[in-house]
Length: 375
Image 1: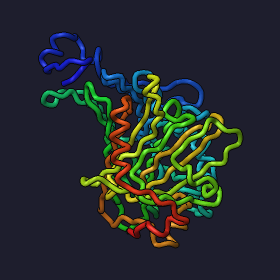
Image 2: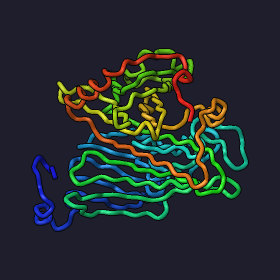
Image 3: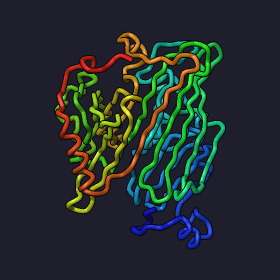
Image 4: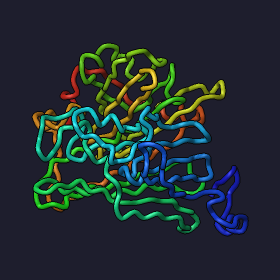
């Protein structure tokens, strides 16, 4: 394996350290300050400069990540908040929305608040991101010549007389890696067909996001969500300095996948000639997550670009249902989802992303209804 610019075999590394956490590992902690208490967390470090945190009591989501000291994700003003402070009504989900590199939205509702419902609730982006994991397993072990680090657990979104959905998640990386992976399996463990919405809110912040930064993606079509987004839609992939009272803009993308079905989208602050270039990418499989939303928020402090692979829209469940776009899971049915995250640190990586992007001609259209496919 490559580590610190040299290649090492497992036996060579083991002879040089008394405990593997000297160079890579997972440390479990309890967050204990203010309303983050008593959230459990697992902190990964790989020896490459990659560090990230997994919140065991918040859907195994990723509230923070960095590479060589540079933040990969945006952190909101709320900071980490324990799940017992979750407020499901209306837009109050935002009161404990830490942002982070990954916040999971769903599983029965994503997007704008819905009308009142005794069982289903009406809050923004659903409840899965505020559910603690059960059956947590933490592994740090040699698998062949790789030292694999992983955390897995199960979140259940269930209610008497309603849905019974289980999300099984594994977050994994390896010694020396600059990347990490999320593998999810969502299963309908009930006996009734259940409506199913899932969105990965991947929030990229400064220093990847800054004035002059760019979204690089194989976007075939880009459509504004509303009139606000339509104003300035030609700059969907360009970003401004922090702007006072900026009104958020959302764009739907139809992506052109690679031959293996994957799509890579990245935010890049291309200052590599000056030595301060940096970017962050997410790779996902379009067959698993057929839709993609860009959340562009250039506000002060709320300075973030969301890259959001999903199987749904963000106007709310009623809109998807009315348009025939709402997914469902039959009793016993499972679906799998895979994502990869990592930093961009060289001009060569940026050039490769742009070369892939340039193979796709981007067209701005007035409505995503023109290209979205029904499930």
